[in-house]
Each structure stands twice: as structure tokens, then as C-alpha cells.
Amino acid sequence: MIINDLQVSQFRNIRSFSWQPHARANLLIGANAQGKTNLLEAIYLLGTTKSLRPGASSDDLIMAGQDQALVKGSVQRESPVVSRELEVRLKRDEARQVRLNGKPLTPFSKIFGQLTVVLFVPEDLGLVKAGPAARRQYLDLEISQATPLYLEALQTYQRALRQRNAAIRMVAEGRAAWSTVEAFDASLVESGSEIIRLRAEAIEELQPLAAQFQARVAGHAGEDLQLRYLCSVEEAATEKNIDAIRDAFARALKARASEERGRSTTLSGPHRDDLEINLEGRPARLFASQGQQRTTALALKLAEVQFLSRRLHENPVLLLDDVLSELDLDRQSALLGLLDEHVQTFVTSTHAEGLAYKPGEVLKVTDGEFFRAS
Image 1: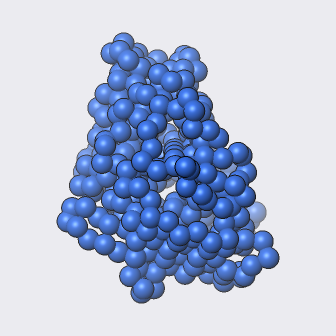
Image 2: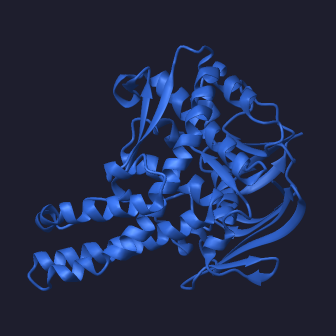
């Protein structure tokens, strides 16, 4: 998958920019707060309709003093060779408009798979030590891009969970009977069971990939990486039969009903899952050194690239936002050396010197304007 042409207008601090990126390696250099990350965010928006920054609204993405913004790109899939035009238009106080080949795309979730992206930001280097929510987000984004069914199930589940939690609070306040809560159980179990099944499949596939990359990034085979699915519905974690997962989930909800009344929230389901990361059989978040944790984060991201490549039969676009400067030269070299040479990458950095990266094109970024380096 390659972005052949990119147009950005009035997005963040980028007034107007049109570019034909290098098919493989692109480096954006400049001081902080000049617009490097904003360009990556535009690409990310084009692939996911989402901002890099949690909670950002359309108004936040539109240049100050302007009423609308546009991100448009020509994307070429390589197997089979197919080109498509993607467009995200933002207007103040209006819903985002997403178009595929000039036609409105609804729901927005249908954009997933049109431009598959893997994002790696400095915060991801803390993925091992972060809370479970960060690891769930890691799984959710990559599986959503690989399997449209997962995103649909996730959206349905989140809606049912909000409604069920609201009903539990009404029961706690004496304004409703428990049957009001149970009315949402069927939807929660159906969508949640699909999420559990697909997460278990993905983690099983990621495990050998991440372990392989861990050994190669670390430079030796002495750091045995293991991934394990910590499912809050314990009986369902190793089940492959969807009916068995549904039964286990339904039993878990009934078993914890009394506790849920007391705590006013749903206590079983994918929203409470985690991805356990162990090195040499011990929890990496507790026992791994900072260097080992960073190596593991790199291994997880490289595994994500390979996971998507296998599932979609083509490579995603890789966005590395100021990650290389956070790594020593050995880890930079290991990361870049393990990338498939056919992966189109966009890398940001405050400098070009001392990076183990050989770009095909270098752009200097100053106050939202982009210039080809001489």
C-alpha cells in the first residue's frame, strides 16, 4: 500500500501542501511544534478518520481562523494494483465528511482497510508499563484494520456497555429494576464474544512474530517474549467456539450481578481485558529494564506491521513520529533493518544527523511549510 499523492489544506498549522511522497522512505525534519507531526496526523486521519490526539474535535484540527480543512490522498494497493482517492473534509460545527473515489462513505468505519496505517509515537515506548487500556487500544486498532467485523463488534459493544452501565446506575439510585440492566445483556454478549474470539486469534498470531522480533531487536535469543490474553471472562480466553464463548460470558454476567449492583458498573467483558507481556516468564512491566521494555515495544509494533501484511496480503503505511531520536543507534538500526523494504515509511525527527535512516526524500518543516532539502 502506497500513498502516491497527498493534499493537505488548512489542517492544524498546514495552510496548503501538495506532495508526491517517496514510495518507500520519507524523512520530515524540523524543530518541535513546526508541523511535522501534523502531517503524520493528516495521513493517520485519512486512514482512520481519527486524530492522533485523543479527544480532538474537528474544530481542533481546522487551522485557526478558518472554517474548514481538507485532507485528500491517492492510495495505490499493490496486490492487485488498484488506485483509490480518499478524502476527509472537516467543517466547523458540522460532521466530518469522508469520501471514497468522490462518493460519500458511510459509516466512516468503512474507511478502515482503504489506507492501512501503523503509527509509532514515543508514548508507545511505554506500552509495556502503561495500563491495560493502552494495550487494549493497541489490539483494537490493528485488529479493526485487519478485520471489519471486529470494528463493527467493538462499536456495538461500546454502545451496549454505555447503556448497561447507565441502567446499573439507575438501579443503584432506585429508579429501575435489574431487568432494565439485563435488557442489554444479549447485545453485550453477542458483540463482546466476537471481540474475545478475534482478540484471542490475533494474540495467538502475534505471539511468534513478536518473539522473533524481540530476539532480533535485542541482538540475541536470550530474551524470550511471551504474550498471553488476560480475558476477564476467564473461561472464554482459550475457547475457539463462539457458542462456548457466549455461554461463558453470559454466565460471568450473572455470577457478578450482585457485585455490579454494589460497584455500579459492568465487571466482565472485553473492556476489562489485558495483554500480558512476559520476558523469560516474568511480567515485563515489573522486571524488565527500560531498554528491554523499549525493545519489547518495538517488537510489538514490528509484529503489528507483519500481522497486517499477512492478513491483508499487502504492507501497511508506517508512521514513525520522533521515535528514532528516543532510541540508541543499535536499536534504530535494528528497527529499520527489520522493516520490509516494500513498506512506505514517514519518519519525523528534529535532525537528520546521527539517524540510522536512509531516506529517499527529505523535507524540512518550518511553521507548517515544507521544503525539499537540498
